[in-house]
Image 1 (cartoon, rainbow, N blue to C red):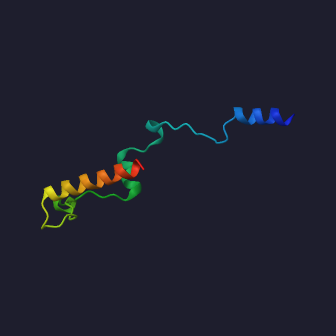
Image 2 (image 1 turned 135 degrees about the vertical axis):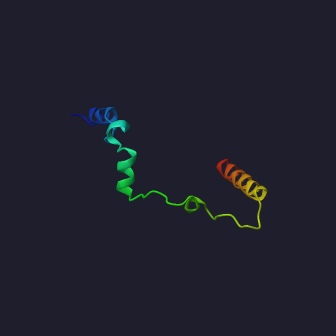
Amino acid sequence: MTKESQMAQRAKKPSFQTKVVDLWEDTPDIEALAAQQGVKPVARFEDLLGDFWPDDEDVDDFIAAVRQWRQEGDAEAHR
């Protein structure tokens, strides 16, 4: 086999292996997934509440911060 034919042969074949996955058959149901991850039911609603924003800042401050972060991200993406 000549070098050219070897190169042509390689160009035809992908250099990686792929596996077809059927998400409906290969994914565990929600109960099995929760058991695998050790997830337990929430006993109190208050346990779901987050404490990530300072009490002295209102929602308008939060919205302004998110808009600023997005603008900075857009500016960074267009450089």
